[in-house]
Image (tube, rainbow, N blue to C red; front, top):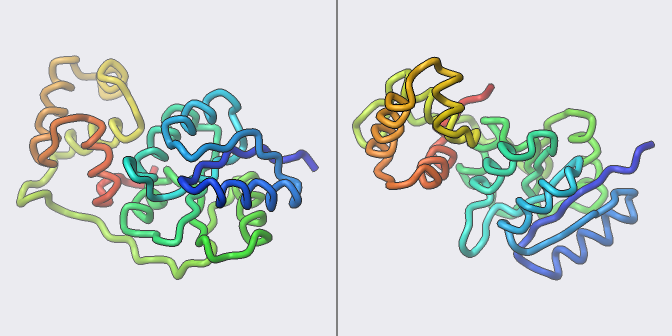
Amino acid sequence: MTRLRAVLCDDQEMVLEALSLSLEVLGVSVVASTPEPEAALGLVHLYQPDVCVLDAHFRDASGPEVAARMRAQTPGTAIVMLTADADFSVWAAFDAKILGGVVNKSVDCHSLGAAVRALQRGERVVTGWDRMPRQRAATIEGETLTERENEVLQALVRGASTSDIALDLDISLHTVRTHVQSVMRKLNVSTRAKATQVAVARGLVGSR
């Protein structure tokens, strides 16, 4: 059997050490680990691992938001969120297929190993959780996204550039910028990155 390659990211060094040892024993090759989510993005892009095991909550970053960026940059790597607190933003990212799996930190190492092997086979996994019912916000601060604005928001979450969106939707760059500004106004944010974070947290991204 081909040895699965993984990158680990958790803000606790002791957790990283324990995960690395446990997964190596189970035949998973941990090619890199880091407590810094920004570093994890670079490591995943560099090593192109089969799986990234990612925490959900960091002091200065949102795990689901990092996962969305990682998915856009390195779509060939499956992402499993290992967390003791799977809040709505985690399940929204799972529903949007940004995450391939959600695993509770309370499970044993064999269960985690089985989960990452399932991801390698192209399966989606939820381990150690009772699956939350899917929820979707219909309106944002009393305003509804238009169909085109929703398409633009989906593209932003995937990490698409203005040019990419214009080409994909067959509209002008100016029209894309207008839609982006409208989306950010309705989400009450000032940057595209924050729009992505809010979209994931509120479950505004759809399955594709």
